Length: 104
Image (cartoon, rainbow, N blue to C red; front, side, top):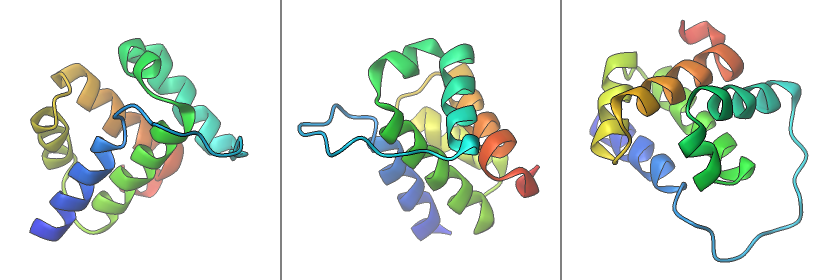
């Protein structure tokens, strides 16, 4: 469980500003939907991160949920990483809705 939480925190740290940008990646429709949800319901996160960083974070959240981390623990981990409660809820909810609906 500790390993899963550490992986989630590492995923959350991906929102730190990137120093170099790679080639523009292509995104699935689910990943695009995730980015739209985050930008709509937590715009401050959307302004501070690239789409790539958001998508990686969303997949990290889904991986943690797949490994047994509860939705509540994922939100708490997000808050511990510096997100507001609302932002953490949006990140976890958008991940579930768009990227891993089986974790609902």
